[in-house]
Amino acid sequence: LLSLLSRSYPFFRAPDDMTALAELCALLGSGQVKEVARKFGRTLLVSVETDPVDLEQVCRDLSCRERRDEELSKAELEKSHHVTPEGISLVSALLALDYNNRITAEEALNHPYFKNSKIHHV
Image (tube, rainbow, N blue to C red):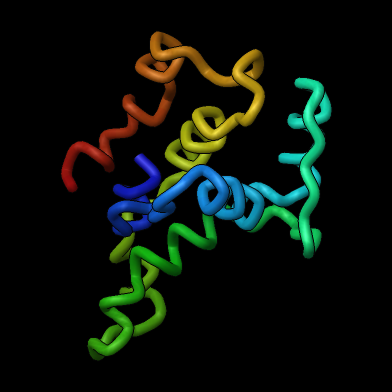
């Protein structure tokens, strides 16, 4: 879903677990990742503390990047993506680091994102 919203495949390009962890820290913020690690009895050391990014803005920016060279107004460029609040809500629920807080498959399939008629016309 993150790849669909951002039009970036694969979204995560980590060749190994350490790189994947660094990508999660960059996206979700190192504080959140360290907190979950501590909850499970682990310690995470990072060289640079990072704040979480605005997932919706990242998806919008990435999904529109190849269209920036076209002669489109800012309003037309904004309409050219498929990022919705429901989609961001679902992605955020799926990316919960603590599996105890992560949405289940059944909950995901019943999420309002899949009831949004806009996504069915993509």
